[in-house]
Image (cartoon, rainbow, N blue to C red; front, side):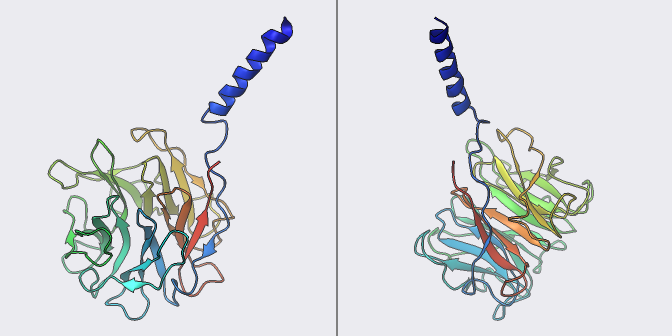
Length: 304
């Protein structure tokens, strides 16, 4: 009788452990980063990667020779997610100017390209601009960019963080800014799209911001995982990659966690971008062994 009563209890306990969301992590740890190589990287600075939804177009900014200005936007393409990246192609004079263009970010549907620029018409420092394309499979179909309204941009520096399309609710624009009112040098903000298509006043995200510089943030497509770079205490080097999670998009973010010494280096690691598969993380680093200033790197994880 004792045996019969105990066995079902053990089975139930095992089932609960297996089904529990805290029983095991959903993903493995991140792998040692791999440099994307000389085909993609250059002797200049290559940074701020952004991957298309299908994983076949990699946008980034670079100050390599042959551009239009101090920094241009480029795209590298590949035939499939298993293929090698092709040589980067400048997005051209419609997107790039004689000023700085940096930090590209694609909307989930692929029609919108957000980026930073200090081109004529900017309010001050770097501002957020946006361009539209009709054909989402054409990486060179972008129309003349327009600046986002002044309520989003400010007279100081406003770094694009990412554009999150929330199904059934208003899209959100994330940014890092050194505007007054935050707890640190640069802080993380979120702006909600209004019914007229413009963005509302940016609101600081206190649980992710710190007293030091927090310039760049991206939120995964499900809105539950954030990656950013910061010089805050507890890191491995100059600037490190950090992550935070939440159970629902209405929840506060968890305490940020450093990605650790396997991913981060003792120098600059910045601008992380999580792919749609949630298993690939691109970023830029000036660690040793690269081809120039900042190079593009990839770290991966697998689903458990």
